[in-house]
Length: 248
Image (cartoon, rainbow, N blue to C red):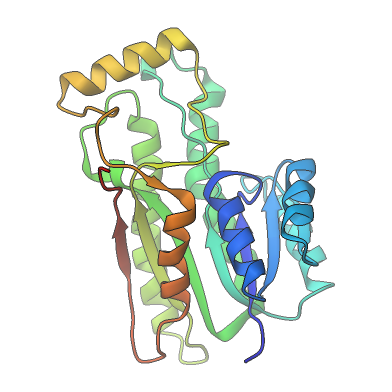
C-alpha cells in the first residue's frame, strides 16, 4: 500500500507534533504546517523522515496560498488534511485586547476554511478532511466564550462542507469534525498571565468545571483516534467524533 500525503497544521507542538511523529513512523508522507519554522524543522529532525516543512500563518490568505503552492512542488495530491492549528487563551471580553479577539476567530475558524479552500483542488478522490474542534462548544465555559464561538463556527462550517462535497459527484472526500477534550503533553501550557489564569480557574470551578480533576488524555493516545478515522473502510462515514480524557 502506498503512503498517504498527510498535511497537519499546528504541527510544531502538542497534538500536531504527535500526529506528525506517528504518521511518519508508519511510513506516511507528512507535511508539517505552522507559523514557527524552527519548531517544524525540529519536529522533522525528530521523526527522521523527509517531512516537508511549510511556514504558514493559517489566518493569512496570502500565507496559506504560498504554503500550498510550495506543497504542490513536492506532492501532486493530498490524501488527508488535519486542521489542528489553534489558539487557546482565556480572557474576559471586557478585558480582551482587540488582537486577542481577532486571533481567536481568525486562527480557529477562518484558518481551517482557508486551508480547505487551498487544499481542495489537490485532494485525492478519496481524501479526508479532519477539523479539530473542542468539547468546550457544548459547555458553559467562562473566559473562553470567543474560543467557543470560533470552534462552534468551525463545527457549523464542517457540517455544511460535508453537504457541499457529497453533492459533488466528482469526488468522494469525507469530512470529520473531531470534538476534542482536554489533552496534555510536555510542551502544552496555558498561555496567559498568572493572575488571569487564577481567575479563570476560579470562574470555571464556580460553574461546576473542576479543571484540575477532570479527565485528561495524552496527545500521543489521541493520535490513535485520527489513525482510525483515516483508515475507515470506503463504505463507512464518521461525520462527528467526540474524544474525552479519562481519569486515571
